[in-house]
Image 1: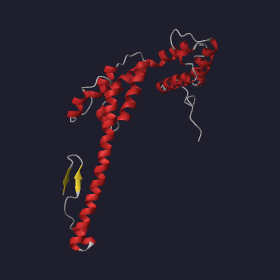
Image 2 (image 1 turned 180 degrees about the vertical axis):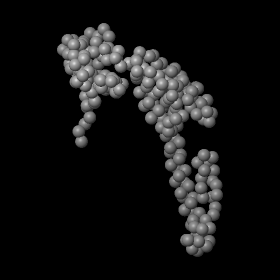
Image 3 (image 1 turned 90 degrees about the vertical axis):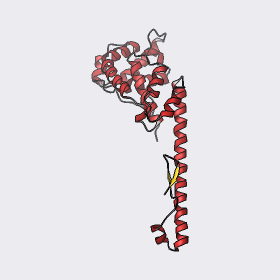
Length: 225
């Protein structure tokens, strides 16, 4: 199987619909090749580095966009030009996504973190400043209101990544507990069937008359009939 390289990504569309993906991929591609500074303001890169960076960027533009920007020979200027062309609609969309993002809507901590980082990158690309406090508040303020203990615990964290680590560990613990309870539930069911069979002497009759504590309620952690 061939390995995917940073340079293997779609060209930037003329309408800029894939601008965020393009910007993330291009930035990663340039950094991978040691050219990341070429798109930074006031950089001290060498002429041959800037030429390489421009070639990489142009390679990932559709033809019409390539032609439109063909006169720009500096990577920072090209990066800035594309930002100017596509940032306003991107900012509007990113702000909507940020406002709508809620931790309680995700089943996986990793999925939430991925979307949070994607939106954060988009906002930073648009010139917005996203702080640790913003990330922390967005997460702990959107925990479901039913999760009272978790909400209280989250208030004790001062950095987003510390809270993220706690939430990930808690999720893993819950998953392991669920697996163990499912196994115990199964064992109890088999045990109950065996008891019935011993009493009634018939497997089919035992299934009809199965009794005892045969199920575990995962929510309350108790045996129920």
